[in-house]
Length: 183
Image 1 (cartoon, rainbow, N blue to C red):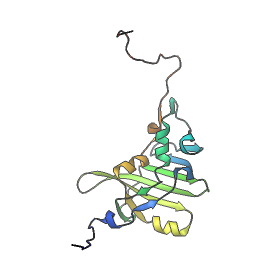
Image 2: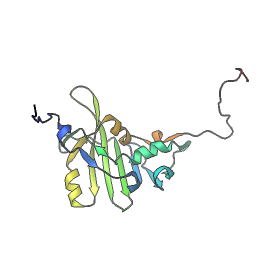
Image 3: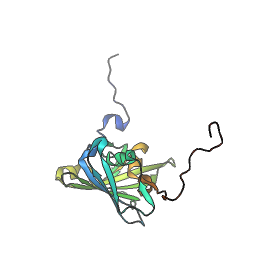
Image 4: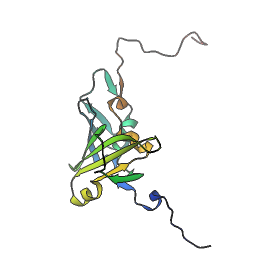
């Protein structure tokens, strides 16, 4: 019939992009979790050739999959939100704090926390603080943003998600059970 109707859902007509920073634009991320010492994660190189390091490396742990690090560093590549509210409205203490340093020396901080909504579902919210241009600060600061569940996973990663338990060299590595055909 040729009529145009506005979609009543906010995400359909609102610009929901927060940040578009390529993962190669980030050099370090510091993860702070309550009751634990801050951990610095550095990236050397770019793309699939990138390598990562953790300082301090937790005792008895080794670096995990590069894909987990790539996901962490790519978390702000296309950061979008599903809901927004004033950050002055009862924002709880963060459960995770991520401090990012870019290749140009700019810094920003993301505070993340889980919150139960009116339907009893947990959702992840963030606030962003940026050390840089006033124009960017005006756009980001003062607001709390709700993330999609998939996006939220990158902002709630801890050191255990990026490492695995080290295997002592003198311990045998478990292989497939023997006794089957050819064994």
